Each structure stands twice: as C-alpha cells, then as structure tokens.
Image (cartoon, rainbow, N blue to C red; front, side):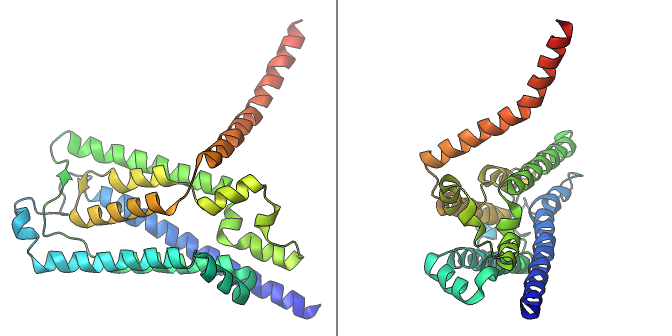
Length: 274
C-alpha cells in the first residue's frame, strides 16, 4: 500500500512539473509568435528588415542564408519530434516503457523542442520585408488591429483546448486514472470522440493560421516559420466528413444547453403573466 502511494505521489509530481513547463513554454510561444512581432511595429519604426537592399543581393548574403538554414533546422527538429513521437509504433513502444507517463513525456518533449526553437531562432534583418505597414495612420492602427485579433485567436484556442479535455491532452488525467485504476481516459470517450482525436489532437488550425500570417510586417524568417507550420498543419491532420458531422452535432447540443436556461426563464415569465 505504501509503495502504491509513493508511486502515485511520484507520478503526480512528474505530471505537475510537466504541466508547469508546458504552461511556461506556451506563454513563451505566444510572446514569440504573436506579440513580439507586433510590438516591433507598434510605432511604425520596424527594424525587422531592410527594404533598401534588393532581393538579388539579400539572397546572396551569407548571413541571411545562414540564418535561414539555422531556422529551417530548428523547424525540422520540432516537426520531427512532433511527428515521430506520434507515430503508432514509437507511441506503443514508449507506452510499454513509460506507461501512464507516455503522454506527459510527449508534451514535455514538445515544449522542450519549442523552447529550443525560440531560444536559437535567427531573425533575418538583412533582407526586405514581403510587406510592411509603415505609413500613418495605419502604422499605428494596423498593429493595434493585429494585436486585438491575435488576442482573440489565442483566447479561442485556449477555450477549445479546455473543451477538448485539457488534462487528458497534457497527460494529467492519464496519471490520475492510473493511480485510481480507471484505465486510459480515452477509453471512456465515445467512439466518435476517439476517432476525432485520432485524426487531430488539437483542432486550432484556423486560429493559428491567423496569428502566423496576420502581422504588420512579414520578414523572410517569419515567412519560413509561417509557411512551414501552415503546411505541417495542413498535411498532418486527417479530418473527414464524419468528424465534421460529429463536431456539428456536439456544437448544436452545446448551443441548446446554453439556450435552455433562457427558455426556462421565458416560460416562467409567460406563466406569471398568464
């Protein structure tokens, strides 16, 4: 009994440490991918690129090419980690070794890969921007518009992750169920939910696409980041019409659930009037 308790405490501690690391990495990723790029443009005095340098010269600059090679390698590292550990043979092998900590290890390694990408990312400042909003009054208003839309998109993404069982996504529920002997939390979900999650673990493609591309200035390294991640998102999922139908049914049920209190209050007021 004591050994079971100690094991439970150990699993819980590892899971909570992973949660804290993933949370910090997520906050850093929001700063890296959204707000840092917008704040560079908030005054209209961006230093992200050099429009006076022709593209023919910039693409032959060793510093520009070196930065792009480093950035491409960092993106390849993240995509390899994210895809390899999600591959069924590797997933089953890790599950046989790690048990309930399999999902925790996947999230931890993903956060670590993101931290490496953000830490060693090389901005390309020696090339022109593909676009840059510099003229008043849009040099002030457009960054503010981007900030507002980015904030809205991140809020939607966080809400979707909460709806899609955030503790299970991070591996916390797996550890909890293991300690209580409840089995894999995915086994308690409906077949439609299991099928959806097997095709796409976190359905936030549209919102992430907005924050990747909607910027006051698009530098060459940002084009590489946005283009690579957008392509990966488009190719990685395998959603189909059956998944869409499942989502529509549950969305309608949620809307009806939210509408029921209002209908109840309306029926009560009508009854009082009669």
